Length: 153
Image 1 (cartoon, rainbow, N blue to C red):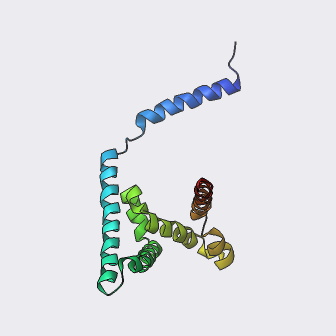
Image 2: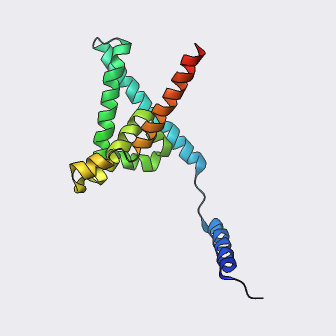
């Protein structure tokens, strides 16, 4: 009995997957973890130095949080525009997505990519292509948790 086309395709796909598993290079997991830890730690340490600077010039610790965040977002956006942050992300992986700098990178990178399409349909429309779902689900989660907290009181 001859094989049907669908069975033959499934068998070929299975053989391909097995062959791919054999030749696929194994990621250096320990090296990636160490790089992520070091780079993420350095970004956070740099943020702490910035905050300490603002405290040293007269801000309270609470007041220094805002300007520190602004400086980190600006530097992340600036280095994304220069292509430096993307290279850092290639080497450091998850360590480069420390929340505030990674978020700024996720907004600026698509905007830079689509700037040729203009400010409205390029930059404006595509700016939140990556960060948009994070914002939507983050706000939805915050609303649900806040609502549950409100009900519990």
